[in-house]
Image (cartoon, rainbow, N blue to C red):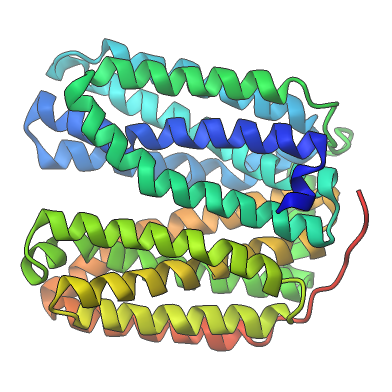
Length: 396
């Protein structure tokens, strides 16, 4: 991780991403809470979360084409400005009649995210190369995400009652503006050739996925894993309130997931450069499946905490290995498209899993759903074991 931070352009990219991510997590709890306060409707609050999945599902692959065509620095700056403008709309949602503004703000902000994420991922190997610095960069980003999950959402939920919803909106908008300012200091980013049509470029990206065994395997594995993970995440709060003694215990378990996420990233950074990506990814997924069974089989908060740490640690390892391997095998000129397809698969898997988990639990039980998610994750682990070894380092 230290090696990556020695690269000036990565420091700017990482700092911009960090500020942006923390600002976003401040509103993860605050937005649905504000909607519920305005309407008293659980459905309306849930719709505010569901709206976030629409842009990745509808625009993901097209956004990847545009990221590969454009100057990626300019694309990231534009995305941050768009997100800042979008969240500002939330300041005008003051009564139930203004609810549509919330949904517009969430959809537009998510649209900016659809552009920003593949652009940032595609630009990372450009500035650090695909050697050990890349695995360090991805591990550092994973640590940042873990801290944001651990601190940002609970902090936003606590602050909304102390400083008010408008103050959090302003803080989030400011984080996007600061991020845009940092990104503007980067040199012109790599981008593709705009002479070919969008349709041609989209087909070229899909053709690479079809022909590239490693990238194709990673897409399937990631989609299966995230669907299983989302199905259990949707059950975590209601199950925990019954099995572990209330909201406080559930909050501790969610924090334990964040702790595991933080522990997993540095360890994976060492392993990903020494072990074959296939077995390493398979082992991480297998450990996650064990954690699923232990978590939903536990009847005490202590056992649940230990299981949550295991899930966070192994899940973090799976994400770092997947991202690093994908960046190493994908040519820079199609990396934005491939990354966008991965993000689209992530959104679709999360959406389907979040619906399928509770539905299956209603028909059977939460424990049976955990066993089903475990089985899906084991299938992903077996498939991941076939991922070819990835070694393609170069110096930036």
